[in-house]
Length: 165
Image (cartoon, rainbow, N blue to C red; front, side):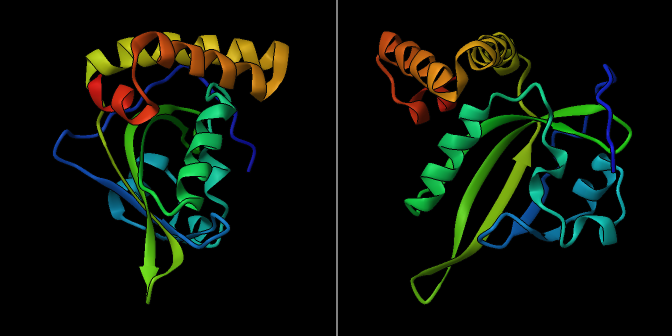
């Protein structure tokens, strides 16, 4: 499915959660109705598809590098993510992604997303643009260094920063 991004932003209710579950390879195994509705795809199209089917090109890759690093260390992560809809629209989320365990072994991942605050997006949108520009010129390592320098300057780690905005 060729989803061409456009400038139409979609929103979901503040009391709504968008939920997905994936296997260890990031293949969607579950999507709740709210997620299905905002993405604008049928459940049959989503289940079995790679989660990055909804990745928006405005997202810096370094954020997903952090995400996978946390998950592979069996840690939860919070991240602001701009996602793509089937019609090319986009929507922002504050995602909480956690490993799912069975008998102490990670068997998949669970993501719950809520509406980000306007204040958080005022901090995230320009930051992600800077990180994306760094990636375009110097690759993921350049944006990772930039993010690391910004966090150092703030005297915070990634988690503290994300949860502070």
